[in-house]
Image (cartoon, rainbow, N blue to C red; front, side, top):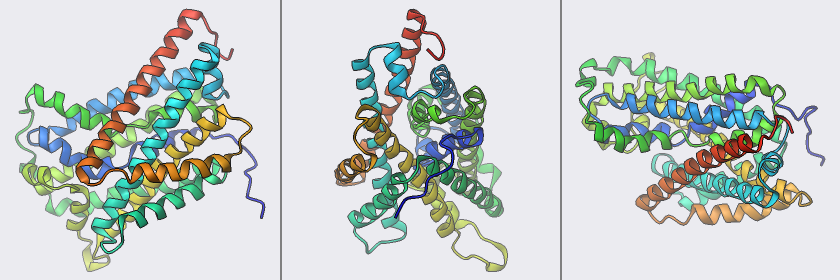
Length: 368
Protein backbone atom coordinates (compact mmCIF):
# COMPACT_ATOMS: atom_id res chain seq x y z
CA UNK A 1 0.00 0.00 0.00
CA UNK A 2 1.35 3.40 -0.97
CA UNK A 3 1.43 5.79 1.96
CA UNK A 4 -0.45 9.08 1.80
CA UNK A 5 1.61 12.05 0.62
CA UNK A 6 0.65 15.66 1.30
CA UNK A 7 0.43 17.99 -1.66
CA UNK A 8 2.85 20.43 -0.03
CA UNK A 9 5.86 19.93 2.21
CA UNK A 10 5.72 23.38 3.79
CA UNK A 11 4.34 24.52 7.12
CA UNK A 12 2.47 27.78 7.65
CA UNK A 13 2.73 30.35 10.42
CA UNK A 14 0.05 28.65 12.54
CA UNK A 15 1.90 25.32 12.47
CA UNK A 16 5.11 27.06 13.58
CA UNK A 17 3.24 28.74 16.44
CA UNK A 18 1.80 25.42 17.66
CA UNK A 19 5.12 23.55 17.37
CA UNK A 20 6.51 25.41 20.39
CA UNK A 21 3.78 24.68 23.00
CA UNK A 22 3.38 21.15 21.61
CA UNK A 23 7.07 20.53 22.30
CA UNK A 24 7.37 22.42 25.59
CA UNK A 25 4.21 21.26 27.37
CA UNK A 26 5.05 17.78 28.59
CA UNK A 27 5.85 16.22 31.93
CA UNK A 28 6.26 19.66 33.50
CA UNK A 29 2.51 20.13 33.40
CA UNK A 30 2.15 17.44 36.08
CA UNK A 31 5.17 17.98 38.32
CA UNK A 32 6.11 21.67 37.99
CA UNK A 33 3.76 22.91 40.79
CA UNK A 34 5.33 20.40 43.18
CA UNK A 35 8.92 21.30 42.24
CA UNK A 36 8.33 25.05 42.56
CA UNK A 37 6.39 24.76 45.81
CA UNK A 38 9.37 23.00 47.41
CA UNK A 39 11.68 25.99 46.95
CA UNK A 40 9.30 28.96 47.22
CA UNK A 41 6.85 30.36 49.78
CA UNK A 42 3.15 30.83 49.14
CA UNK A 43 2.43 31.44 45.47
CA UNK A 44 5.86 32.90 44.60
CA UNK A 45 6.48 30.06 42.15
CA UNK A 46 4.75 32.02 39.39
CA UNK A 47 7.75 34.37 39.38
CA UNK A 48 10.04 31.48 38.44
CA UNK A 49 7.61 30.40 35.72
CA UNK A 50 7.60 33.90 34.28
CA UNK A 51 11.38 34.24 34.58
CA UNK A 52 11.98 30.88 32.92
CA UNK A 53 9.52 31.85 30.19
CA UNK A 54 11.32 35.12 29.49
CA UNK A 55 14.68 33.32 29.22
CA UNK A 56 13.07 30.83 26.86
CA UNK A 57 11.68 33.72 24.78
CA UNK A 58 15.20 35.12 24.34
CA UNK A 59 16.61 31.71 23.38
CA UNK A 60 13.73 31.06 20.97
CA UNK A 61 14.30 34.45 19.34
CA UNK A 62 18.01 33.70 18.87
CA UNK A 63 17.21 30.28 17.41
CA UNK A 64 14.64 31.74 15.00
CA UNK A 65 17.08 34.52 14.01
CA UNK A 66 19.72 31.92 13.16
CA UNK A 67 17.39 29.60 11.25
CA UNK A 68 15.52 32.29 9.34
CA UNK A 69 18.80 33.83 8.14
CA UNK A 70 19.09 30.73 5.98
CA UNK A 71 15.54 30.12 4.71
CA UNK A 72 14.58 26.67 3.46
CA UNK A 73 17.94 25.21 4.47
CA UNK A 74 18.43 22.29 6.82
CA UNK A 75 20.55 22.77 9.93
CA UNK A 76 23.43 20.75 8.50
CA UNK A 77 23.47 22.90 5.36
CA UNK A 78 23.72 26.32 6.97
CA UNK A 79 25.92 25.07 9.82
CA UNK A 80 28.36 23.87 7.15
CA UNK A 81 28.25 27.32 5.54
CA UNK A 82 28.99 29.04 8.84
CA UNK A 83 31.68 26.62 10.06
CA UNK A 84 32.95 23.53 8.23
CA UNK A 85 31.30 20.30 7.16
CA UNK A 86 32.90 18.10 9.88
CA UNK A 87 31.94 20.56 12.64
CA UNK A 88 28.41 20.84 11.22
CA UNK A 89 28.07 17.05 11.26
CA UNK A 90 29.24 16.98 14.88
CA UNK A 91 26.71 19.64 15.90
CA UNK A 92 23.95 17.81 14.03
CA UNK A 93 24.84 14.61 15.89
CA UNK A 94 24.59 16.48 19.19
CA UNK A 95 21.02 17.55 18.44
CA UNK A 96 20.22 14.04 17.20
CA UNK A 97 21.32 12.67 20.57
CA UNK A 98 19.30 15.38 22.35
CA UNK A 99 16.17 14.37 20.46
CA UNK A 100 16.76 10.69 21.19
CA UNK A 101 17.28 11.30 24.91
CA UNK A 102 14.21 13.54 25.23
CA UNK A 103 12.04 10.95 23.48
CA UNK A 104 13.40 8.20 25.75
CA UNK A 105 12.75 10.18 28.92
CA UNK A 106 9.26 11.29 27.91
CA UNK A 107 8.23 7.75 26.94
CA UNK A 108 9.46 6.34 30.25
CA UNK A 109 7.81 9.19 32.16
CA UNK A 110 4.42 8.57 30.60
CA UNK A 111 4.79 4.80 31.12
CA UNK A 112 5.44 5.23 34.85
CA UNK A 113 2.61 7.75 35.24
CA UNK A 114 0.19 5.54 33.30
CA UNK A 115 1.05 2.57 35.49
CA UNK A 116 0.45 4.59 38.64
CA UNK A 117 -2.91 6.07 37.64
CA UNK A 118 -4.40 3.83 34.92
CA UNK A 119 -2.73 0.46 34.29
CA UNK A 120 -1.56 -0.69 37.69
CA UNK A 121 -1.52 -4.36 36.62
CA UNK A 122 0.41 -3.80 33.39
CA UNK A 123 4.23 -3.95 33.41
CA UNK A 124 5.86 -0.62 32.70
CA UNK A 125 7.91 -2.27 29.95
CA UNK A 126 4.75 -3.14 28.03
CA UNK A 127 3.29 0.36 28.43
CA UNK A 128 6.54 1.99 27.26
CA UNK A 129 6.85 -0.32 24.26
CA UNK A 130 3.25 0.24 23.22
CA UNK A 131 3.57 4.01 23.41
CA UNK A 132 6.90 3.91 21.55
CA UNK A 133 5.36 1.91 18.70
CA UNK A 134 2.57 4.49 18.36
CA UNK A 135 5.17 7.27 18.21
CA UNK A 136 7.16 5.34 15.60
CA UNK A 137 4.03 4.87 13.52
CA UNK A 138 3.47 8.64 13.58
CA UNK A 139 6.98 9.65 12.53
CA UNK A 140 7.16 6.94 9.86
CA UNK A 141 4.61 8.87 7.83
CA UNK A 142 4.92 12.35 6.36
CA UNK A 143 6.62 14.94 8.54
CA UNK A 144 3.99 17.48 7.55
CA UNK A 145 1.37 15.08 8.90
CA UNK A 146 3.07 15.31 12.29
CA UNK A 147 2.61 19.08 12.23
CA UNK A 148 -1.05 18.58 11.40
CA UNK A 149 -1.37 16.36 14.48
CA UNK A 150 0.04 19.20 16.57
CA UNK A 151 -2.68 21.48 15.23
CA UNK A 152 -5.28 18.83 16.05
CA UNK A 153 -4.17 17.78 19.56
CA UNK A 154 -2.95 20.94 21.30
CA UNK A 155 -6.30 22.82 21.30
CA UNK A 156 -7.81 19.90 23.24
CA UNK A 157 -5.23 20.32 26.00
CA UNK A 158 -5.80 24.07 26.14
CA UNK A 159 -9.58 23.60 26.44
CA UNK A 160 -9.29 20.86 29.07
CA UNK A 161 -6.98 23.00 31.22
CA UNK A 162 -9.47 25.88 31.04
CA UNK A 163 -12.30 23.53 32.05
CA UNK A 164 -10.17 22.08 34.83
CA UNK A 165 -9.56 25.54 36.24
CA UNK A 166 -13.22 26.53 35.87
CA UNK A 167 -14.56 23.45 37.70
CA UNK A 168 -11.95 23.78 40.47
CA UNK A 169 -12.81 27.38 41.35
CA UNK A 170 -15.28 26.24 44.03
CA UNK A 171 -12.35 24.74 46.00
CA UNK A 172 -10.09 27.74 45.48
CA UNK A 173 -9.05 29.60 48.67
CA UNK A 174 -7.35 32.97 48.00
CA UNK A 175 -5.78 32.85 51.47
CA UNK A 176 -3.68 29.84 50.34
CA UNK A 177 -1.75 32.16 48.03
CA UNK A 178 -0.30 34.02 51.00
CA UNK A 179 2.36 34.99 51.90
CA UNK A 180 3.48 36.69 48.72
CA UNK A 181 6.99 37.79 47.76
CA UNK A 182 8.50 36.22 50.87
CA UNK A 183 10.85 33.77 49.15
CA UNK A 184 14.58 34.24 49.67
CA UNK A 185 16.69 35.15 46.60
CA UNK A 186 18.76 32.00 47.12
CA UNK A 187 15.61 29.87 46.75
CA UNK A 188 14.76 31.61 43.50
CA UNK A 189 18.18 30.58 42.22
CA UNK A 190 17.53 26.99 43.29
CA UNK A 191 14.09 26.95 41.65
CA UNK A 192 15.07 28.46 38.32
CA UNK A 193 16.43 25.06 37.26
CA UNK A 194 13.01 23.45 37.64
CA UNK A 195 11.37 26.29 35.74
CA UNK A 196 13.84 26.21 32.85
CA UNK A 197 13.70 22.42 32.45
CA UNK A 198 9.98 22.71 31.80
CA UNK A 199 10.71 24.78 28.68
CA UNK A 200 13.17 22.38 27.02
CA UNK A 201 12.57 21.81 23.31
CA UNK A 202 13.24 25.08 21.50
CA UNK A 203 16.05 23.39 19.54
CA UNK A 204 13.49 21.76 17.20
CA UNK A 205 13.15 25.13 15.46
CA UNK A 206 16.71 24.82 14.17
CA UNK A 207 15.48 21.92 12.04
CA UNK A 208 11.79 22.59 11.43
CA UNK A 209 12.09 26.20 10.26
CA UNK A 210 13.63 24.79 7.08
CA UNK A 211 10.07 23.79 6.13
CA UNK A 212 8.56 27.21 6.87
CA UNK A 213 6.51 28.65 4.04
CA UNK A 214 7.03 32.23 5.27
CA UNK A 215 10.26 32.34 7.32
CA UNK A 216 10.04 36.08 7.95
CA UNK A 217 6.83 35.60 9.98
CA UNK A 218 8.38 32.86 12.13
CA UNK A 219 9.85 35.00 14.96
CA UNK A 220 6.51 36.64 15.73
CA UNK A 221 4.66 33.32 15.77
CA UNK A 222 7.39 31.75 17.89
CA UNK A 223 7.01 34.46 20.54
CA UNK A 224 3.27 33.79 20.66
CA UNK A 225 3.94 30.05 20.86
CA UNK A 226 6.31 30.43 23.84
CA UNK A 227 3.74 32.57 25.68
CA UNK A 228 1.20 29.72 25.60
CA UNK A 229 3.13 27.38 27.97
CA UNK A 230 3.87 30.34 30.25
CA UNK A 231 0.14 31.02 30.59
CA UNK A 232 -0.74 27.34 31.06
CA UNK A 233 1.98 26.69 33.65
CA UNK A 234 1.12 29.84 35.62
CA UNK A 235 -2.61 29.10 35.67
CA UNK A 236 -2.13 25.48 36.77
CA UNK A 237 0.38 26.46 39.47
CA UNK A 238 -1.87 29.17 40.94
CA UNK A 239 -4.84 26.78 40.99
CA UNK A 240 -2.85 24.02 42.69
CA UNK A 241 -1.65 26.42 45.41
CA UNK A 242 -5.11 27.93 45.81
CA UNK A 243 -6.87 24.57 46.09
CA UNK A 244 -4.37 22.43 48.03
CA UNK A 245 -2.27 25.06 49.79
CA UNK A 246 1.49 25.44 49.66
CA UNK A 247 2.40 22.55 51.98
CA UNK A 248 0.14 19.99 50.28
CA UNK A 249 1.31 21.01 46.79
CA UNK A 250 4.92 20.50 47.90
CA UNK A 251 4.05 16.97 49.10
CA UNK A 252 2.00 15.81 46.08
CA UNK A 253 4.13 14.24 43.34
CA UNK A 254 1.61 15.09 40.60
CA UNK A 255 -0.52 18.00 41.87
CA UNK A 256 -2.19 18.62 38.49
CA UNK A 257 -3.69 15.14 38.35
CA UNK A 258 -4.85 15.50 41.96
CA UNK A 259 -6.43 18.82 40.96
CA UNK A 260 -8.31 17.01 38.18
CA UNK A 261 -9.52 14.49 40.74
CA UNK A 262 -10.83 17.29 42.92
CA UNK A 263 -12.66 19.06 40.08
CA UNK A 264 -16.41 18.41 39.97
CA UNK A 265 -18.74 18.96 37.06
CA UNK A 266 -22.27 19.99 38.14
CA UNK A 267 -24.92 17.34 37.61
CA UNK A 268 -22.38 14.49 37.79
CA UNK A 269 -22.06 14.56 34.01
CA UNK A 270 -18.50 13.31 34.37
CA UNK A 271 -17.44 11.77 37.67
CA UNK A 272 -13.74 11.26 36.89
CA UNK A 273 -12.34 14.44 35.41
CA UNK A 274 -8.79 13.16 35.87
CA UNK A 275 -9.32 10.49 33.20
CA UNK A 276 -10.24 13.10 30.60
CA UNK A 277 -7.33 15.29 31.64
CA UNK A 278 -4.88 12.39 31.57
CA UNK A 279 -5.96 11.25 28.11
CA UNK A 280 -5.63 14.82 26.84
CA UNK A 281 -2.24 15.18 28.49
CA UNK A 282 -1.16 11.96 26.73
CA UNK A 283 -1.93 13.69 23.42
CA UNK A 284 0.35 16.56 24.38
CA UNK A 285 3.19 14.32 25.54
CA UNK A 286 2.74 12.23 22.40
CA UNK A 287 3.48 15.35 20.35
CA UNK A 288 6.59 16.02 22.44
CA UNK A 289 8.01 12.51 22.09
CA UNK A 290 7.10 12.27 18.39
CA UNK A 291 8.83 15.53 17.46
CA UNK A 292 11.89 14.73 19.60
CA UNK A 293 12.31 11.34 17.93
CA UNK A 294 11.61 12.88 14.53
CA UNK A 295 14.45 15.37 15.09
CA UNK A 296 16.78 12.44 15.76
CA UNK A 297 15.64 10.85 12.49
CA UNK A 298 15.98 14.13 10.57
CA UNK A 299 19.48 14.73 11.97
CA UNK A 300 20.68 11.27 10.92
CA UNK A 301 18.93 11.54 7.57
CA UNK A 302 20.62 14.85 6.79
CA UNK A 303 24.04 13.28 7.46
CA UNK A 304 23.40 10.00 5.64
CA UNK A 305 21.32 11.20 2.73
CA UNK A 306 21.32 7.83 0.96
CA UNK A 307 19.86 5.94 3.93
CA UNK A 308 16.07 5.72 3.84
CA UNK A 309 13.95 7.11 6.64
CA UNK A 310 12.49 3.71 7.53
CA UNK A 311 15.94 2.15 7.93
CA UNK A 312 16.91 4.92 10.33
CA UNK A 313 13.71 4.38 12.32
CA UNK A 314 14.37 0.64 12.54
CA UNK A 315 17.81 1.37 14.01
CA UNK A 316 16.93 4.08 16.56
CA UNK A 317 13.67 2.52 17.82
CA UNK A 318 15.30 -0.30 19.85
CA UNK A 319 17.98 2.15 21.06
CA UNK A 320 15.25 4.49 22.30
CA UNK A 321 13.50 1.64 24.12
CA UNK A 322 16.71 0.44 25.79
CA UNK A 323 17.58 3.96 26.97
CA UNK A 324 14.10 4.62 28.34
CA UNK A 325 14.22 1.42 30.39
CA UNK A 326 17.63 2.11 31.95
CA UNK A 327 16.33 3.98 35.06
CA UNK A 328 15.41 1.41 37.69
CA UNK A 329 13.27 3.60 39.93
CA UNK A 330 11.76 7.05 40.27
CA UNK A 331 14.95 8.56 41.72
CA UNK A 332 17.04 7.41 38.78
CA UNK A 333 14.37 8.58 36.35
CA UNK A 334 14.39 12.04 37.95
CA UNK A 335 18.19 12.21 37.69
CA UNK A 336 17.98 11.07 34.07
CA UNK A 337 15.40 13.77 33.35
CA UNK A 338 17.61 16.44 34.94
CA UNK A 339 20.58 15.31 32.86
CA UNK A 340 18.56 15.38 29.63
CA UNK A 341 17.17 18.84 30.44
CA UNK A 342 20.59 20.31 31.25
CA UNK A 343 22.21 18.70 28.22
CA UNK A 344 19.47 19.94 25.87
CA UNK A 345 19.50 23.46 27.33
CA UNK A 346 23.29 23.83 27.25
CA UNK A 347 23.51 22.41 23.72
CA UNK A 348 20.76 24.68 22.39
CA UNK A 349 22.09 27.90 23.91
CA UNK A 350 25.80 27.29 23.31
CA UNK A 351 25.49 26.04 19.71
CA UNK A 352 23.05 28.80 18.73
CA UNK A 353 25.25 31.57 20.16
CA UNK A 354 28.36 29.94 18.68
CA UNK A 355 26.90 29.82 15.16
CA UNK A 356 25.52 33.36 15.37
CA UNK A 357 28.89 34.66 16.56
CA UNK A 358 30.91 32.85 13.89
CA UNK A 359 28.47 33.97 11.19
CA UNK A 360 28.87 37.57 12.36
CA UNK A 361 32.67 37.38 12.49
CA UNK A 362 33.01 35.67 9.12
CA UNK A 363 30.42 37.91 7.54
CA UNK A 364 28.22 35.09 6.29
CA UNK A 365 25.33 36.75 4.48
CA UNK A 366 21.67 35.86 4.85
CA UNK A 367 20.63 33.01 2.60
CA UNK A 368 24.19 32.41 1.47
